[in-house]
Structures are given as C-alpha cells and as structure tokens.
Length: 339
Image 1 (cartoon, rainbow, N blue to C red):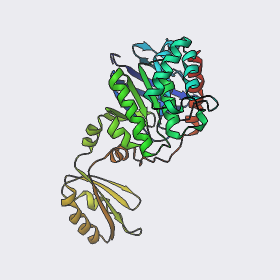
Image 2 (spheres, one colour):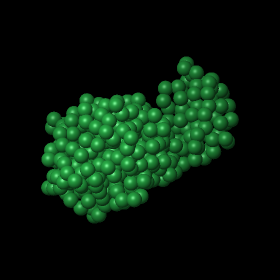
Image 3 (cartoon, helix red, strand yellow):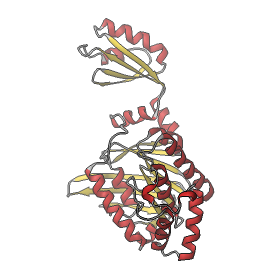
Image 4 (spheres, one colour):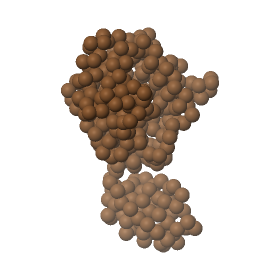
C-alpha cells in the first residue's frame, strides 16, 4: 500500500490482555474527499480501529497514516488535522452554543478574535443563530448534534471521523445532519470516515464501505459493488417449526447459487426470485415441510451484511464494554490533543 490516501490503515493489529485480538491485520485506504463507511457487528473491532487511526489508541502492530502523517510518530499533529464527533454527546450543557465553539477554538490555539469569527460563521452554517446564546442543555437532540459537528469543525480539519453521529435522532434530524456533512464535503473537500448503525445512511451517503467482523475486513467496495457480489435475488422461505431441514432440497433447484438456514427460515440466493418461488414451495411441500411465508428481495446492504458476517444488522445494539473503554481513552486523548 502506497499510503497516498487521506486515511491509510496498514496491517493494523490490536491485542488486549496479550490474547484478545480486537483488530487482526486491518488494511484499507480512504481517498481524499471520500465519505467512507465502516460497518460491523458489536465487538467486531470498529471502535478500536477508529481509535488507532484518530491517535486515541496505540496499535500493537501495523500503522495508521492520516494526511501523509504516520499516527504513531505524529500523534499531536494528527489530532490537529482531524475532527472527531463521538456517539456520546460532548457539548457542555452549562455553556451556550457560542461559548462551546469559542472554548473549543481556544483549545486549538486559535486567537480569541479568530475564534469568535469562526464560531459566528459555524453557528450560521448550522442554522443555530437563534439559539447561539442559549445554554446547550436546552437544545434538542438534532441541535446538539449540529453544535457538536460545528465544534468538530472549528479548527478546520482535513479529516472528519464520525462515530454513530445520528444515533437517537429522528429521520428528519438524521437527514438534516447529513445534509450539512455533504455540503461541507462539497465545499471543502473534507474526507469523512463514518461508523453508523443505520444501513440506509451507509447506502445513500457513503462512496465506499468496508465491513469488519472478528477484527478482519471481510468485504469492501461501493454499496452497489457489494450488493452485486450477492448476485440475483434473495428469496426467504419460512417453514413450520417442526418441519424437516430442506436445505439440500432447495439447493438442488435450478438457478439456486446458495442456501443459508437460520432457525426455520432459508435464505436462498438465485438468478430469479419470481421463477424460483413456485418451484421452492412445491419442493418443500414434497419434502413434508409446510411453507408459512415467502419474501423476495433484491440485494440490499442488510443482505450484504448478513452474507459476510452471518448475522443480521441490529440497529438497537448499544456499545460493548470494550467500546465504552476505548471511547473514554479516545475522549481523553482528543482533549489532550487540543491543549
């Protein structure tokens, strides 16, 4: 890997306690100006990877490179080139929106006059002018996220890390937040690295996506490239709880490329769902397996995720204990980098 991208991971490894490999040889490159999605089940290594790239955690081996700087050798310089929006709220509720921005600017060594100027501009950009001099604790969830985005941008970073940035927002708030991010990317050429629990966001907002599972990258590409890897349609056939296993029966049908069983459901990849359904239903009944439901879907990111991780993507999952511990290390590291 040449390391010419805005973000480069070269064989990153993180071992906890001498035996738990949270990240196991992760390599990828994010181009300048790209919005790059990073997906994975809880405990897959997302938070640890992002923490190593954002100078919040030292890798056991391998290296990260941000805007041409190796993270391990230039941690403080890297922290000044990146913005990080954590999934936990970091705005100080006892300060006004304007004060939050001016304090953040000061921690990056920006003069008071310049800090005020940048704060005013960002407040207007984020549509917070009317609330600028109210305490942040009075803000709605969407307003707080916009304020936190502004805080992450006050020092004009070249790379922005977003960790579950819209978690808990309603659809309107999510759309508004991403509208601001897209506008900033277009105007400044900023590179954006995002983890998200919302696959629709990843599908519509990200130029490329990497899926991590058990500490390894298991798939990467544009959303369409990943969906194309599944090929054809996906038919889900549900049978009665006491029905015999019909995996091999379905696999033998014409046009079927793969069958995956999960409890009493069978996920069948095939060339044409419309053609397969009557054949599958008839074959299942002949095998004494009563069919109780059938659905046909074109490949989606949900299907991609299930294909490569063996698990369904669950939006309601919260951070693991490891995620929370790493997050606290990252928060402390980021705050130190601002001093």
